[in-house]
Length: 135
Image (cartoon, rainbow, N blue to C red; front, top):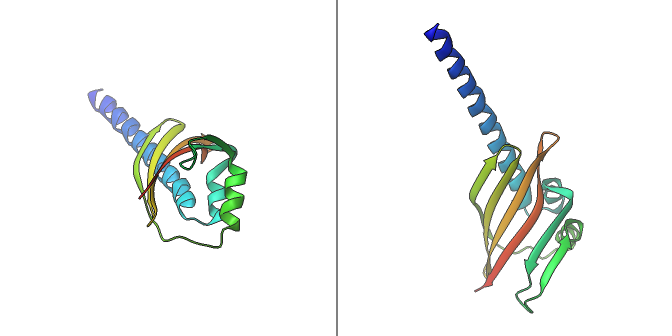
């Protein structure tokens, strides 16, 4: 009987670890689509109802932008900026996740905070807030 209990515990633990690994890979894949800078890939990362919220560094105003508007700007932008981008942290709990991304250009450092949900088995960014510091 003790062997059966141990085997059951090991199977449950390994199943949980596999699920966590799959979720981590899914969240990372979603974030990499966003981080690509390619408008079509970025669009795949976001849920269509997502919003981007931030404080405009020029005038201090609060902005609340539908993600479709943001993606349209990215697709229309032909002036690609050299940048360094990395995932700083990622937390996953069940069907919810948060990630912090650092983007550095010659002009600024940005920190993106992404909220993600696992919707119909696929990770999607449902909201983005960010902070920008000019250099």
